[in-house]
Image (tube, rainbow, N blue to C red; front, side):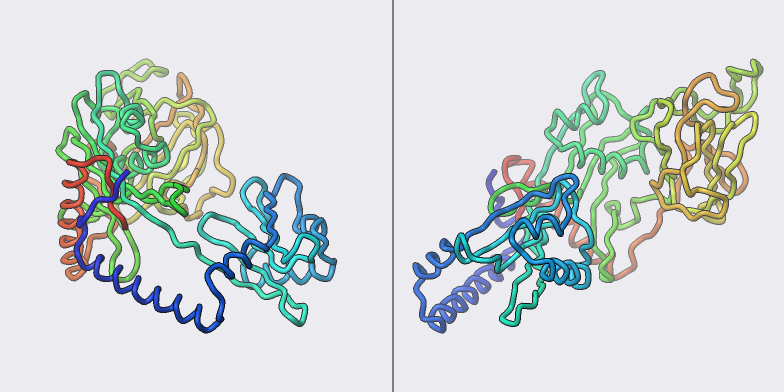
Amino acid sequence: MKKAKDIINTANLTRMVMALAVLLSLVAIFLVATKRTPAQIRNTALNECKSVVMVASGDTLSELLTAQGLTHSDVNAIAAVLKKEAEITTLRADRDKLEFVRNTDDAPVSKIVVIPSPWRQVELTCNDSGAWDCKTVDIERDTRAVYKTGQIQDGDSFYLAGQRAGIPAGILADVYDLLAFEMDFERDVRAGQKFSVLYEENFSDGKKIDNGRVLAVSFDALRGNVKMYRFRKADGSAGYYDENGNGAIKSLKRTPINNAKITSKFSKNRKHPVLGYTRAHKGVDFRASTGTPIPAAGAGRVVARSYNRGHGNFVKIRHNGSFETLYAHMSKFAKGVNVGTNVRQGQTIGYVGSTGYSTGPHLHYEIIKDGVHVNPMTVKLPAISNLGKDDKKKFLEYRELLDDGIKQLEKSPNMYIQL
């Protein structure tokens, strides 16, 4: 994949040239000051002996260090400095790595590098007095913005179409969560609809390590084209906004459970499958298997957690002065979720079941606005926050810049934007 040229602006090129000049100057000064040639420097690095250990299940820091010949005194000192200066108290199996450095094969360990992630490492060195010094190093990311487009075909779900377009599963999940504030994926997805995603890929030493954040998304929904852009405000906080700078993330999601099929819609007149007579269906039913986690559709406070004959096990959450949501027929409640508990958006509050008047496992989901039940699929949901005047001006400039970059990537899909 080639890097797109001149997508952002020429100022970046100027900064890069200046940075390179400064870097070359520093290298020259370093070489003169130490009076060592590049060949000598390379030879010194090559003479170092390194061994890398991946933490396995059951491994402890003490066992790994003593296996490398370190004394119990060193082990205690290293554990203490890791806890105090790097906030590392435990090692994670199959995730954390330790690198041990020696000057020669038979020399004692002179340096230990703890690698908890591809983007951070903690370096421990033994100084002349025998104490261990600790330094945390953040690994610079080579972040690239990649653009993917897709189209819904007959029989497709959004996920299938996204996978066919080459969008990673984790990015698709993030996009789904964003669009779920505006769309009903059961009713709004039709053959012929197009979508696009601009997202980050993180590289280190030319090798892709992981995916980053979704930067922009567009979907031709039935209600019109839905666009969202990620933007960082002056105070450092980031969020998603529509083309005009209005908050794109709503306070509630229309579909709490991703990919769940709607089995019964909101209706003022529906024949109840258990009771046998017609009455209002004040929510939407989503089919899901027993035990499926039920996330809170928005942040709020639990105001009811109980059982009744109709709803079975249910939870009710108050989100603000106007909105409440209710989740019914749960098999069980999530641990720690009680009346008065504050929950965050997406937090599991219970699990799908078939308690109460129910013919099978599903989630019955209600939205109550100002005391009146409303259709979760059509009610206008309030945004969490919009941009202020100054931030909005900067956002519009940024959005125009990003749109220009997207246009170039549309013409050259194998290129990327260097961030």
